[in-house]
Image (cartoon, rainbow, N blue to C red; front, side, top):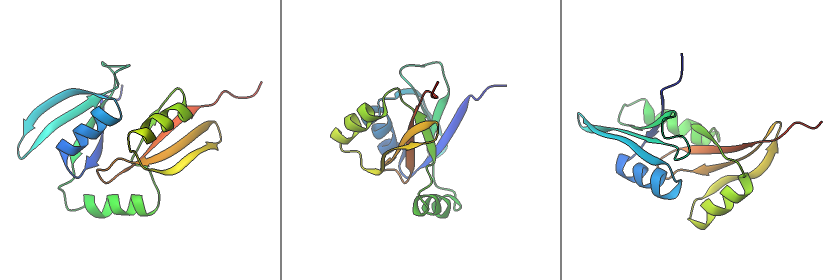
Length: 132
Protein backbone atom coordinates (compact mmCIF):
# COMPACT_ATOMS: atom_id res chain seq x y z
CA UNK A 1 0.00 0.00 0.00
CA UNK A 2 1.27 3.48 -0.89
CA UNK A 3 0.05 7.03 -0.43
CA UNK A 4 -1.22 8.22 -3.82
CA UNK A 5 -2.77 11.58 -2.97
CA UNK A 6 -3.11 13.76 0.10
CA UNK A 7 -4.89 17.07 0.33
CA UNK A 8 -5.12 20.52 1.82
CA UNK A 9 -8.39 22.43 1.94
CA UNK A 10 -8.04 25.75 0.10
CA UNK A 11 -10.23 28.85 0.05
CA UNK A 12 -9.79 29.41 -3.69
CA UNK A 13 -8.46 26.75 -6.07
CA UNK A 14 -7.10 29.20 -8.66
CA UNK A 15 -5.24 31.24 -6.05
CA UNK A 16 -3.95 28.02 -4.49
CA UNK A 17 -2.70 26.75 -7.85
CA UNK A 18 -0.86 30.01 -8.41
CA UNK A 19 0.74 29.92 -4.94
CA UNK A 20 1.68 26.24 -4.96
CA UNK A 21 3.17 26.37 -8.47
CA UNK A 22 4.53 29.88 -8.98
CA UNK A 23 5.65 30.58 -5.40
CA UNK A 24 6.44 27.17 -3.89
CA UNK A 25 7.57 25.56 -7.15
CA UNK A 26 5.35 22.49 -7.42
CA UNK A 27 4.11 21.52 -10.87
CA UNK A 28 0.56 20.93 -12.02
CA UNK A 29 -0.33 17.24 -12.36
CA UNK A 30 -4.13 17.16 -12.88
CA UNK A 31 -6.70 19.86 -13.56
CA UNK A 32 -10.07 18.36 -14.42
CA UNK A 33 -13.63 19.57 -13.86
CA UNK A 34 -15.31 18.03 -10.81
CA UNK A 35 -18.81 19.43 -10.47
CA UNK A 36 -18.59 23.05 -9.31
CA UNK A 37 -14.87 22.64 -8.60
CA UNK A 38 -11.79 20.97 -10.06
CA UNK A 39 -9.73 17.85 -9.40
CA UNK A 40 -6.58 19.91 -9.01
CA UNK A 41 -3.32 18.26 -7.99
CA UNK A 42 0.30 19.33 -7.89
CA UNK A 43 3.48 17.31 -7.47
CA UNK A 44 7.09 17.98 -6.60
CA UNK A 45 9.22 18.85 -9.63
CA UNK A 46 11.80 16.51 -8.10
CA UNK A 47 9.31 13.61 -7.96
CA UNK A 48 6.74 14.14 -10.75
CA UNK A 49 5.47 10.57 -10.35
CA UNK A 50 5.34 10.87 -6.56
CA UNK A 51 2.55 11.66 -4.13
CA UNK A 52 0.06 14.23 -5.42
CA UNK A 53 -1.21 17.13 -3.32
CA UNK A 54 -4.90 17.76 -3.96
CA UNK A 55 -5.88 21.42 -3.65
CA UNK A 56 -9.25 20.50 -2.20
CA UNK A 57 -12.06 23.07 -2.26
CA UNK A 58 -13.01 24.07 1.27
CA UNK A 59 -16.74 24.37 0.61
CA UNK A 60 -17.94 21.76 3.12
CA UNK A 61 -19.40 23.47 6.24
CA UNK A 62 -16.99 21.63 8.55
CA UNK A 63 -13.90 22.95 6.76
CA UNK A 64 -13.93 26.62 7.82
CA UNK A 65 -14.09 25.95 11.59
CA UNK A 66 -11.55 23.11 11.25
CA UNK A 67 -9.06 25.30 9.36
CA UNK A 68 -9.61 28.25 11.70
CA UNK A 69 -8.93 26.05 14.74
CA UNK A 70 -5.71 24.70 13.22
CA UNK A 71 -4.46 28.19 12.36
CA UNK A 72 -5.47 29.59 15.77
CA UNK A 73 -3.53 26.80 17.49
CA UNK A 74 -0.55 27.09 15.10
CA UNK A 75 -0.98 23.58 13.70
CA UNK A 76 0.23 23.06 10.11
CA UNK A 77 -2.17 21.43 7.65
CA UNK A 78 0.73 19.77 5.80
CA UNK A 79 4.46 19.27 6.04
CA UNK A 80 6.93 19.32 3.15
CA UNK A 81 10.59 18.25 3.20
CA UNK A 82 13.39 20.47 1.90
CA UNK A 83 17.12 19.83 1.59
CA UNK A 84 18.26 23.20 2.98
CA UNK A 85 15.76 24.88 5.29
CA UNK A 86 17.55 28.20 5.62
CA UNK A 87 17.99 28.56 1.85
CA UNK A 88 14.31 27.68 1.28
CA UNK A 89 13.11 30.16 3.91
CA UNK A 90 15.28 32.82 2.28
CA UNK A 91 13.94 31.99 -1.22
CA UNK A 92 10.31 31.99 -0.10
CA UNK A 93 10.70 35.14 1.99
CA UNK A 94 12.07 36.97 -1.06
CA UNK A 95 8.90 35.86 -2.90
CA UNK A 96 6.68 37.43 -0.23
CA UNK A 97 5.83 34.32 1.81
CA UNK A 98 4.95 35.17 5.41
CA UNK A 99 6.48 32.86 8.01
CA UNK A 100 4.65 32.36 11.30
CA UNK A 101 7.46 30.27 12.79
CA UNK A 102 11.04 31.12 11.89
CA UNK A 103 13.57 28.30 11.37
CA UNK A 104 14.20 26.38 14.56
CA UNK A 105 15.55 23.07 15.76
CA UNK A 106 12.88 20.54 16.71
CA UNK A 107 14.42 17.22 17.67
CA UNK A 108 15.54 15.35 14.54
CA UNK A 109 14.48 18.18 12.20
CA UNK A 110 14.86 21.88 11.58
CA UNK A 111 11.51 23.41 10.78
CA UNK A 112 9.66 26.58 9.87
CA UNK A 113 5.97 27.34 9.25
CA UNK A 114 4.40 29.69 6.70
CA UNK A 115 0.96 30.93 5.65
CA UNK A 116 -0.07 29.52 2.25
CA UNK A 117 -2.47 32.46 1.55
CA UNK A 118 -5.28 29.90 1.13
CA UNK A 119 -6.22 29.49 4.79
CA UNK A 120 -3.50 27.07 5.93
CA UNK A 121 -0.27 26.96 7.82
CA UNK A 122 2.32 24.78 6.08
CA UNK A 123 5.43 23.37 7.74
CA UNK A 124 8.71 22.78 5.94
CA UNK A 125 11.34 20.55 7.48
CA UNK A 126 14.92 19.57 6.93
CA UNK A 127 16.04 16.26 8.39
CA UNK A 128 19.07 16.69 10.63
CA UNK A 129 21.67 13.96 10.79
CA UNK A 130 21.89 12.32 14.18
CA UNK A 131 25.17 12.97 16.03
CA UNK A 132 27.68 10.16 15.76
